[in-house]
Image (tube, rainbow, N blue to C red; front, side, top):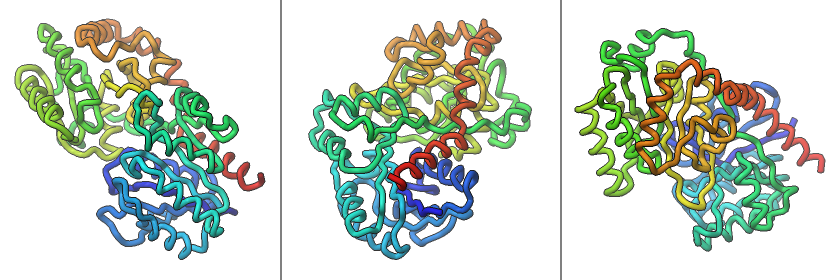
Length: 387
């Protein structure tokens, strides 16, 4: 059986790509235990080699855009090379330059890797006018396969003259929520929340708290529901990511709103289990995202939410393309808090209808379970190795 290595951030690093890689690696080991899986991880809190079950984790690079990958090549040599070298690429991890491509090409040339695969968690459109990013995407034609998560990302790379034969669309995986049978009191106690403060329908938004998550839009929308505030509780949960004065101002305004309305502000990094508990506790999940123009990605939080089979209100942005594709009537524009407020109110009044309407999205959640997406990856790896 072949040997596979991922180059990626990995828990305990607080990063969506890290969680993605862990889900994928564990699912691959579940469907085919004989595959050797190594993760060449970032030099995070745990600097030494370790294991995650049967997955070997070897710190090999500095996250944040380092241009020095000598340690990665040394680690590849130490394990006598691999058959598939798969980079889980995000610009925030590897920077906007193409040094990681150079390192992988060198590994292939030195026979430390037979085939090179890149998963692009973000694809940029030329309108962003970032030359180094567009050059990076152009150079991807030198690798053996490129994985993306959405049609938008796939066609954008084709428009940038990447050979369609190189591009594989494999949707983001979905975990079906194991906490759905737990009652409200049990879930609240597990999360450290006061159950008595959770009145009416529970609305929630989870994930890193920053401006592109549209929390300012949500705060304005909920402010318009003040006359029915006794009918719901809004739970805003996640780790603050204050990157600018605008982020700080937005968080401050939300905290002020929390004092006036029935809003619980849960400020902490959420483990996967905690996110699943919150979505199981919720009656309605709100994802009021705002995407940068020309930046295409897919939301991992959307997939965690889909697996809870709860109604989801989201904005019409590329990151939530799958929500728009399968449940378009429950989406709103990303700029109008009044429209979002009306949608929340309508969903609360017509809850049973909304649950039934979203059945297509729930079916998609089942079709994209992690085990199934792992099989898609395994099929790709086998195809590459016999080509």
